[in-house]
Image (tube, rainbow, N blue to C red; front, side, top):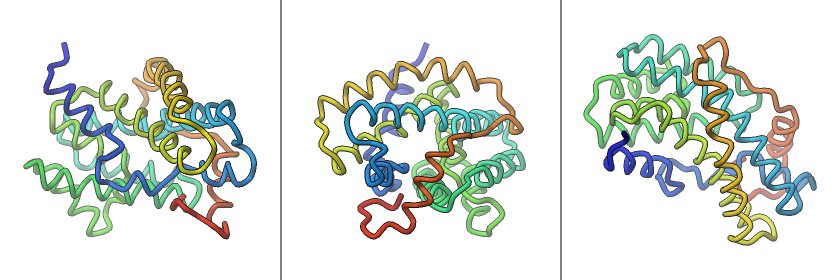
Amino acid sequence: MRSVTGLLYVLQFADSALPVGAFSFSNGLESAIQQGVVRDPASLKQMVLAATEQAATLDGGALLVAHRAVLAADMQGLVAVDRAVYLRKLNEEMRTMTVRMGRKLGELGAHVLDTPLLADWVRAIKSGASPGTFPVGLALVTGALGVEARDAFAAHQYGVASMMLNAALRLMRVSYFDTQAILLEVNATAEDLYQRVRADTIDDIRAFAPLLDILAATHVRAHVRMFMN
């Protein structure tokens, strides 16, 4: 059974207030609102569901692969999955988001945890040998803390949904009641998503959500922007 301490570790690294810069990003939501794709709580829910499904098959699957590499102390495997995640991000803004958050998480982890593997990864990022994506950073931190892969996946999925819903409160007419109701529904899908990707290898991680990629691409040229993507 999960210990109380282990549960607190999961809560800490799933917290939207974790200082890795998640508040600066909307995961494409700002552009979706500007383009009229998201306009009310119902369409907001559909976008968050699509985003968390995409996150599960790409970043979530990569997190699980990286978590196994952490347990095996496989630095070469970590760099390989880090590169695979980065190369599967089809637009500039999503690549920017994952490496800015990942590098911040790596620096934070190296400061609070004394683990050689995490320190080696931070050095690999600084040397340019590894991109520094967020799911790999989360795998390193949670793995070092003894958090199980399933719980690390849950923390990641929660982070994606909470990032977008917190952004929605600043971008559109939606209430805290609406966003919490949406979050409850989105959270209910996490177990099925985990079962879908739990055995994935590095060759299996993938994403296919053309509309989300197009929205992120158009956001680069937006005249007014509150979020970095």
